[in-house]
Length: 202
Image (tube, rainbow, N blue to C red; front, side):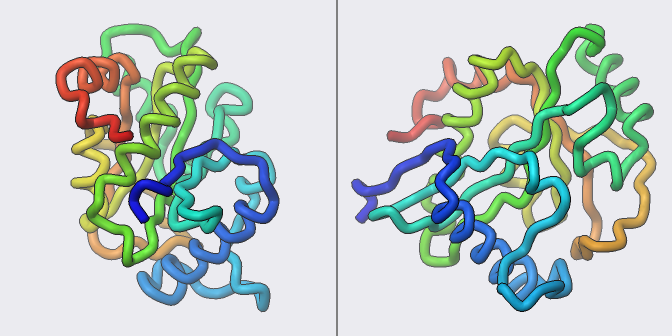
């Protein structure tokens, strides 16, 4: 079965619908992060109208994925903006990376999920391989995300780092316990790729 695993950026409506169904199952039924807001048993919000989707498939069945959203305009269009002070975050990020973000492309990942039978098998690494390749093609330099105490270790293994910023209350997304705003400089991801080829599994 593992030989049939595929990681891809997709526009296939069938696969995207499967992914939204899995999101509902994980975020609403399993994790209780969200309340069900429709009778279709899919989980989506306004950002899904212009998001891209990197998915994990086996035998043409979606078993996981992540939503990828590019910054539509400076400081506009990312889900994280509803959770933190984006001005403070970007200022601290510039200080941390010691370079200006004015000419840098920024994107955010969110709604990372893998179905239970396929968790803890390294498939997230393969997913991020595809994201890394895509970001390099589009000259995207920085990825943002938010993580809670159950998911932060996954992102830290990829190379994401924490920045301490003021948080806003989240009305529609009930994170369990503490949560953090994270960033990944793609240059750091390149270093990880060079140091450990296992990071990008086949």
